[in-house]
Amino acid sequence: MLKMTKEHDNQEEINEKLIDKKVDRRNFLKRSGQTFGALMAAGLFKFNFSTKGAKASEGDLSDKLIILHTNDMHGRIEINEEDGIMGMPYVSSIVQDFRENYENVLLLDAGDTVHGRPISDRLYGSSTIETMNAIGYDIMTAGNHDFNFGYDRLLELEEMMNAELVSSNVEKDGELLFKPYTIREVAGRQIGILGIATPATRYTTHPDNIEGIDFTSMREATEHYVEEMRSEYDLDLLVALGHVGYGANNPDDEDFTVTDELVTNVDGIDIFVDGHSHTRIPEGDWHNDTLVVQAYEYLKKVGVVEIDFSNDQPEFQAHLISAEEAIANYEPDPELEEILSDARDDARDAMLG
Ligand SMILES: [Fe+2]
Image (tube, rainbow, N blue to C red; front, side, top):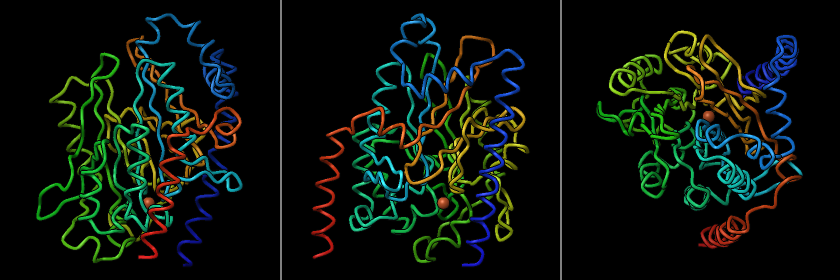
């Protein structure tokens, strides 16, 4: 427990530092005459996409890709305004808004998704998958707690989900348990998405859940598959979808690797969509040529990255939408409310046996 508390304190400190950095970066952007960060934030805060869309030419929109991302929802699929949790009904409304206003949208989840609340746990994760299917998640990666019902159950959930599950460093008997990466053609571009799991799963879920499963070196897997993806596909963008953790080394982890260290040492990742450390990164954080983003925890935020392909090098802008903003600006999606209502009944029935 002591370790947990210490890590948590470290994480709070990192969160604060990142928020300070955000202020510095804004000042820098103002000084350099670039206001895109401020403009993006203003547009998103006002959810003024119709105006923004009308101002942008058709060509501009077809050159843009929006990546929406969540992480560490830990079964918090229900709305809990008191705790600042938007739940899947508001996630759905945000996603629909972006899909209506942009031609190209990818929806990703960085893991620790299916376990953590009775509404999901009593149904061994299926209710969370149902909400993800209704919203239309494209790709997810597995977090350590996604193994909490046993790896065989995770394979069943993978069957149930419409999203692709990618993970490049989880093996059974020397074979990958999941597809390591996927290639999507979006916005007329080739987008590669590589999954990475934390080897901390070895000791953060019950050993019975992962019997016979190896979590291999993140660094080796990342180097290997980034190289493979870059050489075999003519990629316009390589996104890592990692349940790795930002800014807090864990000395118990033999790889001793965290996202910031990984992207500093491995070239070729354009955007790293992260999870595990429950970190709030308001506008993303650059390490060499990689933009790292993470959307905090429990569906308190949804992350947005706008990628503009209209110049030689793609340009990125990142932002987080908070539950407060979502609740103030959207109606919760009634279809998702209905799925949750049924799931509550099913979870109750499951408990009563
Ligand atoms: Fe995690």
